[in-house]
Length: 237
Image (tube, rainbow, N blue to C red; front, side):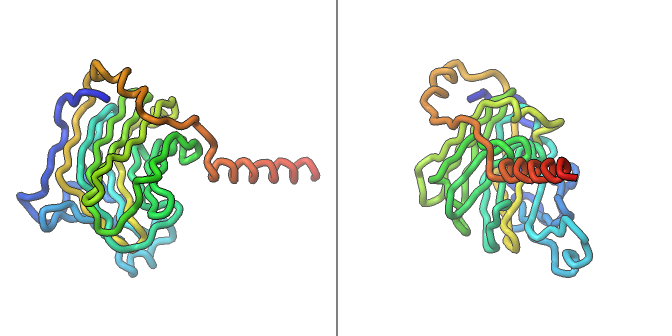
């Protein structure tokens, strides 16, 4: 979609081990993240930590890449191991609850925005597979977004493209990663650039990418129904 500009973060995780720089790799829900065996490695919180927290227990590893520019090009390898998927995780998001790619071993990948209220894209062929390396290239500029993935042993490229104002409705678009409940996450070969100009052939190329009409998600419909029930109750009083 766009040309990469200035490189803001490049890390292969090969030259060190141990603790991470939390100003760059911010652990969400205080989950443990370390560099080991040449990757960025995330784990769920230990049972005793989960038991001590009343919420945000860290049942799955979560991390936020805080050098991500608002308009960016990012490439990285990603692997999920063990654990259990839920209706919420695993995911890759771009700004907390701003927009999010949810991965599923059953229904593939969905791309939502506005706090998971609007469905903007999907790739049913992009299934969650345990222990498989995913090779991600994702870009955001203004209200346009592209997410492309290949996986080891599955050479076909899955592509999601969307254009919607909801993609921009956040103070930042930090890349956030959440794993499966009880599982681990590995990240490698990470590169994040500022997004430069659109490629000259982008207008032609994007017309060839399948898109979805924005629709309400099940979460949005449930919230609307709950609001209608509350409104109906208040009128009866």
